Image 1 (cartoon, rainbow, N blue to C red):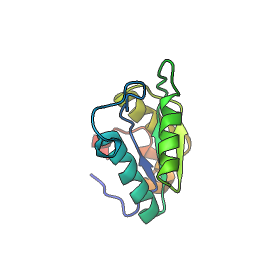
Image 2: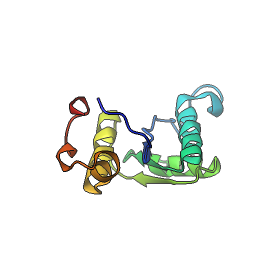
Image 3: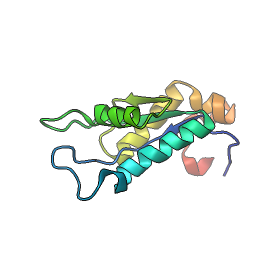
Image 4: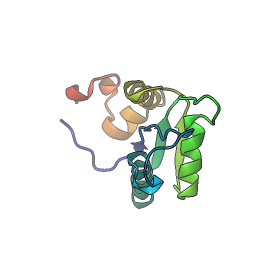
Length: 124
């Protein structure tokens, strides 16, 4: 497996914050919030973009992308964007990979080898 010297993108896979009812306990202690804090910290330290792939919409509330956008703005994440694609973990991973490959980020930034586009992680 290849390792990379400098990441160029952080993919933050969302976890449902259950915005209508809320989860039990303080927001700051919950895994989805800790993921946002970690992604923000890495974005600041490494100067890289955070991508959040999600198309999840909660009835009677804002969609998950807007929810994450609000939180990342609140905690002052310097560089992030939302891709409105992917409803569950696998779909979100696929949406992220689709974005990376269609924008040539994967081939140009990580491998510089066109043959790597579309390969499975085990093939790397």
